[in-house]
Length: 81
Image (tube, rainbow, N blue to C red; front, side, top):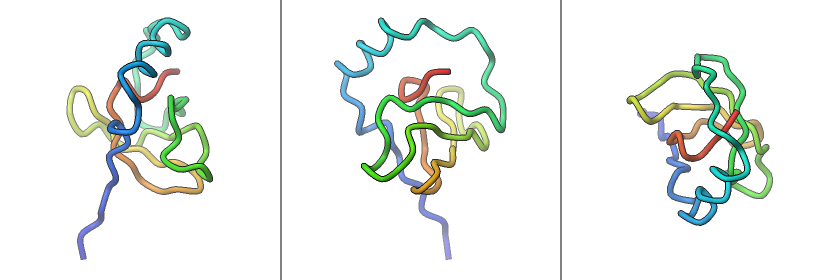
C-alpha cells in the first residue's frame, strides 16, 4: 500500500501568496526538520493553520504534517515562519 501525500500548494492563490509576502517579511531562518511553520491557507476548514516540516522533498518543497489533517506536500510559498 503506497502512502498518498496531498499537495497543498495548489490551494493558495497567487493573490494570497502576494499578500502574505507583503505582510510577512522573508524569513531568513533556515527551515529544518521538525520546524513548525504557519500556513497561508489550511488544507481543510478543520485542519490547524500550522504544519510541522518532516523532510525536504526538493529545493522548494517539503513534506509536512498538519494536525487534524495529516501529511501534505508544501511549496515554500505556502508557509512562513
